[in-house]
Length: 406
Image (cartoon, rainbow, N blue to C red):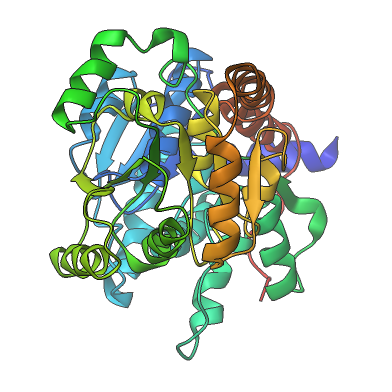
């Protein structure tokens, strides 16, 4: 009881001068920008869940087009230069965030990226606010002091890992982290959007016409940014082994023009021009997945979660992915999809043969299993509820001072 009284006194002093009048918990999420991407999407989904729960949701970033989405869900955006990695700016951001915390009565700060996390951690220390981090991916250690710089993401009172793979990465590389502070919360799929029953035939027909797909020809799809580690070359080399099949392969996504040209030249070299089409970006991925007969993730590096793997299964599509990273957590091998050795075109070709050979009954059974698994384990609602549980856990006990982990 005495410890709790001391904490309440400390918090009252920290929040003196606050304009907050509501007793609802106030949570501040901090990230570099709201331009686009999985981290940004998760931030907005959490802000929406907090406001739905009657909490106050604040987000600090340098801004971007997704700020409009925060406005729509009833959250408040605060523009700060937290994207900067300049030490002088990061230092000044401590004071800026401290003022935000005091002004709004913030009780918990959730940092989602390294540069803003350093500023947020020290601001939380100054004010007595709780400090939570999410590790969204493995960080490299190539440059001197990089391990120290990255370590801020392991210094929260609670450290959220977006997969068991990331939990293992944290414990393998930061031995001083107490495993008890880590909470594994998988990223979620919005099953209101990625629901096969809600994707109209008109949307599917529009995409099929846009991409000039012939009727009755099976479609293999690899969605993702045009970047080398996404493994486009692995898929193209696999297609050589099944080139006698009548199929279309759609590579969906944008990226560097130089890499796109590199892929186009490889398609020509392998003689796959009639089979492979680079269709660019797609704004209706739910309809795109519904067009596909099989969806491929071919990443050459382990993925921290793998949004494509989860979204495609939510639509009920067979998915093939490398047996590394978080993919084995999402796919039940030979039950809801197939796992293959990374960077193995022959194994990928074999899995493609299996997927394309499914008859109607087997395809429907796999779809039902995949949809059920995603809805039971990997939804946005589940992710948000588990994260709010972490917040509640901290807001009802004395805080641990962030830091001290190397």
